[in-house]
Amino acid sequence: MSSPNGSQDSPLLRSTSRSSQDGAGGTSTGGEGVDRSIEKKTFTPKRIAIGVVVLLTVGALGYAVWSTATGGQALNVDREKLTISTVEQAPFQEFIAVTGSVIPERTVYLDAVEGGRIEEIFVEEGAMVDEGESILRLSNNDLRLRLLDSRAQLAEQESNMEQLKLSMEQQSLNLRQQIAQMEYQIRLLEREHQRQERLHERDLIAEEEYLSTQDELQYQRRRLRLTRAAFVQDSLAQQSRLAQMDNTEQRLQRSYEALQESIEALTVRAPVTGQLTSLDAEIGQIINSGTRLGQVDKVDSYKLRAQIDEFYIERVRRGQTATTQPIGGTEYELTVRRVYPEVENGQFEVDLTFDGETPDGIRRGQSVRLKLELGSPEQATLVARGGFYSSTGGNWAYVLTEGGDQALRQPIRLGRQNPNHYEVLGGLEPGDKVVTSSYETFGDADRLVLE
Image (tube, rainbow, N blue to C red; front, side):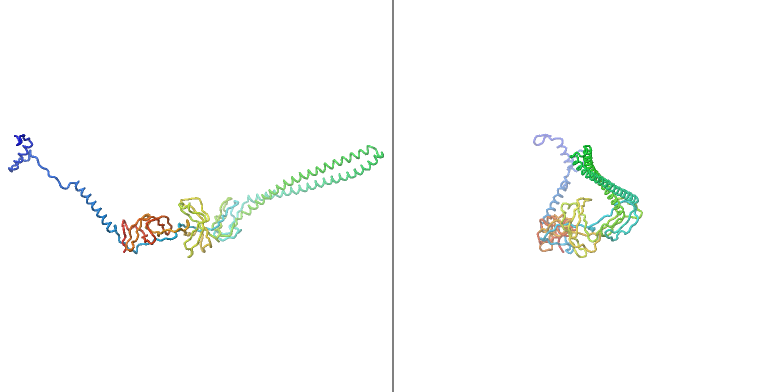
């Protein structure tokens, strides 16, 4: 069959036409060989997702516009529960809070100079002692035997010295007697030789007798010279020997005196006047040489020893000052006298001494709170310390408006700090009022409404 335009109908068009006719006549063939039309859905998943995004965007824009118009998210708070501080321009003193422990300004330790057995204890731990007072006594039999032996050696040496001196005197006396005898003989021979010489000139004496006297005179003169030389040499040798023996005696004397001092050291005495704060000794106990027995503290003056975080080790110097919290209602000034270079467990130690009088009633081991200054005061913009810092890190704060009925969130910048103040580097001016108490319950509020 040809279409009006002269083309033949396709089988698909013919089938569709028949289906239309069957439907017009109200008859049905049971759906066999008939095509059905599909209706399109209005709310597809894609359209629903697009709608949700659009609604959220519109809502966010609306909230932003509303926040801008109303000043952001607000939170009503009770003014009485807030801490409000005024920013001020004032001297800023950087210091750190530390705790010092009271210790005596001078402590002298008791060490056993010699070992031995403890025989007596004269005072108890904690007692007040005077310098030189006996604290305990040791016994050491070996040391006593060494002392007796040293004394015997010294006595023997002294005896030898006396014998040598006596021998030297006797020998010197004999030599002097011999010299005196020779001098006497020579004088006699000289007179005889002179007499014989006059006789010899007159040929009144035999030649042999004259020459014999002359030879005897020369012999005695040589003998005298040799005897005098021997006397000098012998004197020098005896003096040298005497000096050696004297040195030996002095050495033995020093050894004996040292042993005597060791015997004296068996009685342990207080080195200074003070308090015997510790004594580790019991009767019958064997003590070795060098063992620490205790210590004596001078209780008329004290100092403080403080531990400081190693973060400040480069900033703490000898001569810096510190102030105590009131002790008996009075603050006391101290000066750093010694900085220990060793760091243990992240801390180092310093010693501080009181500039004036030591506080009455303080005791060893007592803790004292201090403010240690780290530099000279400088003019700066300051805000009081508070719990707000833990929530903001010092990057922002709630600042009161001029009317004082609201506090707006405002960015700030803080610098150095001490236990009382933060240094303000930006965002705040002197006179501004800041909420410095904790912000933990404020959430993300942009402003606080004070009631």
